[in-house]
Length: 276
Image 1 (tube, rainbow, N blue to C red):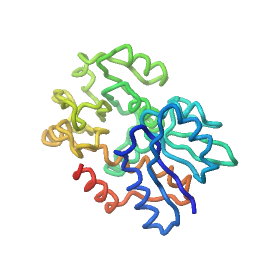
Image 2: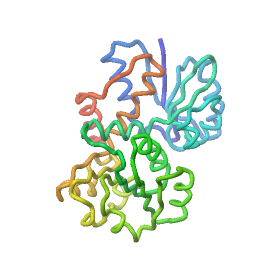
Image 3: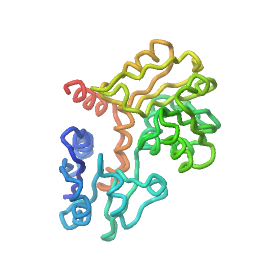
């Protein structure tokens, strides 16, 4: 029986076992997926012992993504660009690492708006943290034109811009109104709007009505920012889809079958979020 897990500190909040457990059940696969709390000082030893402890691999969540990257025997180009991994799998006794957050974001966006093309499109990203870093390479692979990082700390945005290469620009927060003009996609990657955090309050007036507004936060399922955007007539995408779609490749790597994100699975996780 194959088994996988998710590690983090703390880990109680993770919904990954619900997602992977659903796929194991519906696909009729004999396997397991569990939460394992791992303290920061124990990350290397836990990962080195993955195979010995019978795991096909694991997900990695906060605060271990960078530490896990350092332990990998092999990483792909995306993980190398990010300096972090969220998915680990064992092949030939070696630890392989990748990051699926960016492809999860893109798959979520396109599952809701299949006809949307990012080719040469202008994208504005709010925030310059790990989530923005994970999403930008997927936008680049989809052919996005100008990608603008708008952040309260311009220095941090400039650092991310330098790491991401051509086509990416950094702007201070006070230039947001100018940057929204002509944008096809606006993405909030900050924690603003998350349960327990202040709301993200910006003027969407300069943003074209044809644009899509996205928020990677999924607790609550619809942030005040997304609600306001929807009520103003914009198409919107919440963060739940990214959570679900980023899990697909890990499951395939561990259990050998590529699962699909179904309305039933989405409903299952929505109900769990609403209970929290």
